[in-house]
Length: 354
Image (cartoon, rainbow, N blue to C red; front, side, top):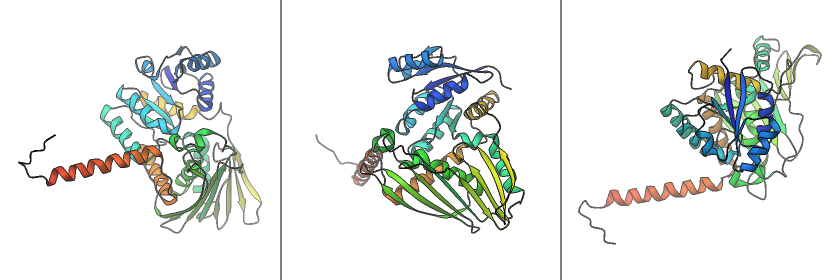
């Protein structure tokens, strides 16, 4: 077990509250401080969860040398800037999923973290759960034979939330919900992908509301994934084989795993061990890695973070979903490219007058 560590929380929304409540019950970890764009909200949060320090700004949090890890729980659109601020100030980071709004941002963050020698991880919490080892052990045991297909879905009626519908906040079902089925497929079937097909329903604001994704692997296996912010789903993940199938209840926080034989009879069932909330596992993993001087978690390594981000970029490209800040970046790149081309074609003695 690692020595006593202190965590700081950036953001004061629902997930930040869950993390603060979780850390309060953990061993060798304390929630030292919280920062928000609103000083009053930071103080309210600190009072509610018994957090020692309420910073007046994100920048003030950077000055506190007592923090071992900053947990970022802000909207997707802010992850890039928030992580960049932390890394440039030498602060270790655990950032909520989706890691960034797109793969380009993720690449820049990971490159900066490497340059500054700072620890960075993505809070894809199911990756860190002990239950994942149990599920993969059952799958690899051959109890259902060689798996041929899986299905996974996640849906909640949350289309009334601004962070889901607002393009400027990198809204849409994919980054918030679809990232879970994508990770489930990756954890069960790996990364040897042949192609990804999909269909999508777009909101009036221009983000994705519901989607169906089919991943075909080079060995012939298939993953069919669905997510929506318009309704409640059963959140199940099912892996199929010639000898039966494995049903996982709640891919968003594994509740149980049950194996069925060819007669649809349950032959094995395992429930998730008692946990605080499930958030504790990612925190423990980060703190142990930091204690060892490592810069990433083995459960969710940097190359896997980037691979999933690229998958989501590919899907949004198929649907034509582009965030406003991405359009701005693209326009800047075009201007820089055109400017560079003009400069490159000018004679060396060209004199430009104002």
